[in-house]
Length: 344
View: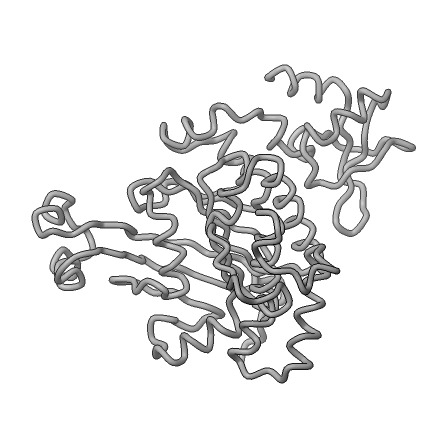
């Protein structure tokens, strides 16, 4: 027997394989007759709406994977297919290698209760329950003993910065605080996979940015596998490890924020990204040169040009780019930053 290759990439946490969702009568039969390549006109004539079209994607363990597109692009339908809140018409959805479409309804309920967390745009808090009881509610559904569920709920409330508000009711909280309760509730079950469908869209800009900061802070602590839905490209590039852009139910390009901005594959992606300030997405790794700069300030390889620009305003001539293991990867010099900031 051949030993496994330790250098091989780990299996993705979640995989989509040729996933379709058609709404309307006899959808599966119509799709099967078309050999997986239905004519849009024929679908319309049959009274079918194609919400998700031949989607293939991998979500890696521990990454923030953003799915974005305009209203009606299919992104929310896709995320509901991933958790089988909406039944796909065809394809495979693999979670840790297991095809969820082969799971029974009872098995899916248990998977959603114990393995998946979900946060949506509308907070859906129970108005007659306190913050503590709202957060503990999914644990109550699991028949977790009262003392244990309250203890876990209190930890999650503290984690999202609401310690001291356990006895408050939703009507006594601001919109941002209510969304924090929703986040704490979804985290109480200890999910491995976290779905967030436009969770901050209903918030005003200042609170929205605050909640983005909160999500980044939580992710730095919890290292969840996150599928995040948004129509806001600025939000996407701020949060995402990778982004998939959808149009008419299909994914038109998938990559890192930097790849999408610097190398758009279609005119549609180019329009999406043309207003983005490149220094906000271009990593220092892309403009660094080899060699070290002894005594220079240090930044991580994930830092963007915009992140390091203030260091040069403060007088630095160079910064050292540091890898995850603390090793020097290269040096970014003032002239390279100036060229990028001026549009080079």
